[in-house]
Image 1 (tube, one colour):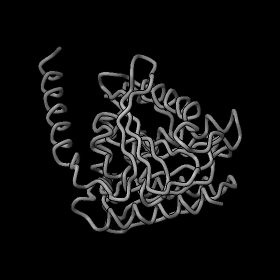
Image 2 (image 1 turned 180 degrees about the vertical axis):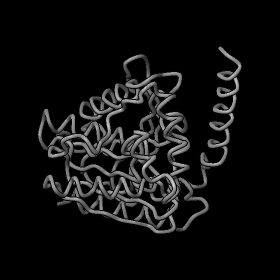
Image 3 (image 1 turned 90 degrees about the vertical axis):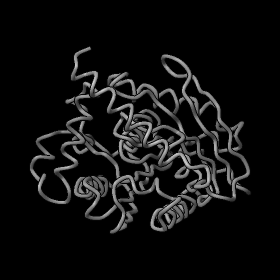
Amino acid sequence: MSMTQSVESAILAQARRALRTLLAVPAARANGLARVEDIEIPGPTGALRARYYEAENATPSPLMLYFHGGGFVCCDIDTHDSICSWLAQSSQGRVLSVGYRLAPEAAFPAQLEDARAAVAWGFQNAQRLGADATRLALAGDSAGAYLAATMALEVNRATPGAIALQVLLYPLIHVRDSLWADEELRNFRFLGRVACLYIARSLGAEALPSLLDVDVSAAPPTIIAGGGPMDPVGNDVKAFAEKFRKAGVRVTGRKYPVLMHGGLNFTAYSKTATTALREVGALVRAELAG
């Protein structure tokens, strides 16, 4: 390992520790949960950490699998504990938060392989959790939303309707530098461009497929929530939502002007975060009850 690589590894390790300290706050977990349980599910190269959340009086609606954000390089089920607990509580449902291998230790497509294994486990085990055995919902924020959207398309192309709903929270749509460079001086795109350059290099995946290029006609009904000027993926999210609509996919959008990218993690500190997650959860409940 070169000196540069050693320094980068040390910085990344420090960033991961800092995020865990800031975000893995037990007091931020929502009330109104009947069950929270840590489990392991089989992955392609070993067990994946997961955490199951069940609301009080949960309905037998589809199990929601949640993939955390963090640019594919940071975060885990602990940093996103509060988001998943609030979604479970406000949707009166069941949420399974799934960890996956991170870059640069695991190059792309390891993240998709882990997500694929988690989806398979969800279908096989939903019934014993009291959920609908025939359908799943997929959700995620930022990089996790990329995994959720990719898996939703993959599954529904093979089995239409098997993914009943996708919930995409300020989704990362692509890491293509040319698209970020076009707007780097607007809407905090400069910061986003720097982050995506690092993500692409860490993944070993400069050719990570852009979700703006894929056929989305197989996508399930979609809830997309994003932020305002401090959310650098905002323009991409708008374009992605329009792509769904043109393909005939039902889209419900919510925009929170003061929400920054990653801001939903701050339920311990931000009324905007809790309000947004309550509203998104209510949309999920209404969609899955229909």
